[in-house]
Amino acid sequence: MGNVRIGFIGVGGMAEHHIKKLQKIGHAELTAVYDANPARMNEIAERYGAAPFGSADELLDSGAIDALFLCTPQFTRGAVEKKAAANGIHLFAEKPIGLDLEQARTNSRLILESGIIHAVGYCLRYLETVQKAKAYLADKTPDMVLAYRIGSLPPVRWFHQMEQSGGQLVDQSTHQVDLVRYVAGEFRDVQARYAQRSIRNEAPDATIPDVGVVSFSLQSGAIGTINTGCMSRRFGRAEVEVIGPDFYVSLDGNGTSLTIVDDRQNISEKCGTDFYFEQDRAFVEAVRTGRQELVRCGFDDALATLEVTLAANESARTGRQVAIGASKAAV
Image 1 (cartoon, one colour):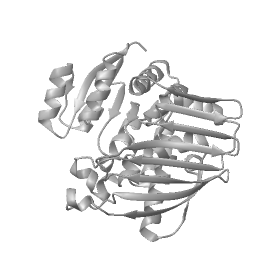
Image 2 (tube, helix red, strand yellow):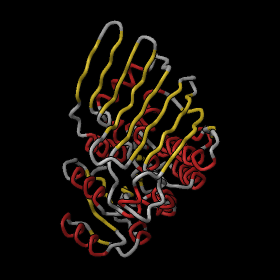
Image 3 (tube, rainbow, N blue to C red):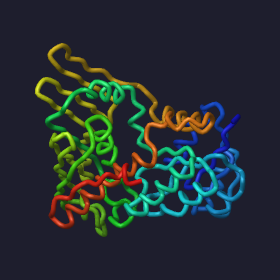
């Protein structure tokens, strides 16, 4: 394949961030866009020289694209993924891949059966620091894993609604959940406690919790916690720590800073990788060459991360520990 003709469904801020990266990538050609907001769609179409379409179906049936970036919120997901797979259109979807686990399982199965190249936006996997941590931990057995995602409340109203965003764990802290899976191993079970503390002062109609703690065990037997909060305007933290009897690994600042301490070394390094660029370049090259292995997170992998976050939501709702099934094997 020569140039990869790319379309976008959803052209908000995150989509334009991808578009700007694609402008720097050889063989990437933006050809088509659709958004439910016509003014925004036409603005992006004119700015980047793409054709606007009247609906998602019209774009998918147009023959104008080889690959699609799906950048709509998670509560809108479902039909587009199925149609892209049916039409043989390679698919990149922003995380998370939905709010309904069974629908996500169906989409993942259809995508895998279709043979299209598929990727999900767990961009931190493309950091050199994350790759080094994963390689270091490959032959280690952790005893404890600690993860954090604490910051302020995003201003968009749909994020504040549990039925639309799934809450911070599903929408934002999913990156930390995915990092735990990627570098430390698969989850066995989760137990969560959530609360609304100060969120109603900022968003009176909010239904999401603004603080949460998730305890978990991994298949290896390691135990850990995920601390998540979207109430802090004065403090932010995004980190995954993996601890064993003779080693300590920290991926701080959303993975951009790596620390490894053991009997032989005590190193700290920062990573300047443009992980969005590397992620988008990997997808374009995978489409161009037909090599799915260039993608570091496909739909089957993203499904397993989604299952953990939705299981935590279930646990917080019911007060019970929830076991994690084998999502990747199930598809």
